[in-house]
Length: 249
Image (cartoon, rainbow, N blue to C red; front, top):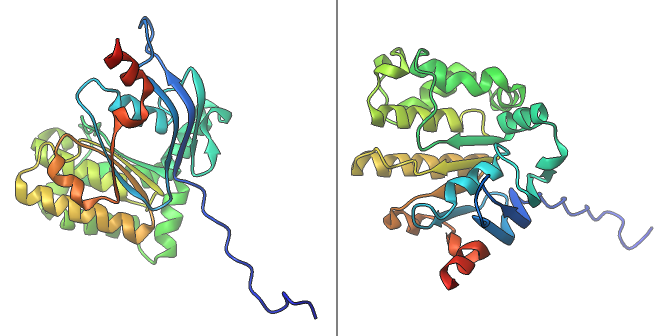
């Protein structure tokens, strides 16, 4: 019998939630890059608070991470998958399965009810439905649970998104991102329309749901008071050489 007999193999390490390498992005018509990031890693399950002034490229970075736009150079890997290796349709499927977005402008479908907006990711992603099934939960029950935790009353769920207040729309967008337990949550100024009490409840829910699912969180905000709740606080200027070059000019 070998010395290794009876010793269980160590579990394989999880791929980083996000890995950027030699990333360069320039908007059409611009004279210089707005993002030049040599390297950045968001570990699986890690919670990072990303800050920077308006116009510093934070939202652009989130769009690159989600595969919504593509860099001119470098690579973006999400959960070990190189996004540039996927066709546009495959990127859409990968995003639906693996990334929950909370957009600054919400991007709800105005003619659908709040409930149907929350359930949309489960309609498009069999993997999200499968994760809920494995946990013994239906999508409808999970939508109800998330809505309740976000202080969305049952009657609100039946209203078209167009008739909701800005704060209600923001909370519906959060529930939509979280449903089906994606491995990465990307949040762009997600608390801007919430009062102080709901802001704290929202953040508690977001962090606890990410922890329960083992999901990584990339959270962009101007509100420095929220930073204390995160594993790491990152100024985009720390990693973005395009900003440093602009400041030095």
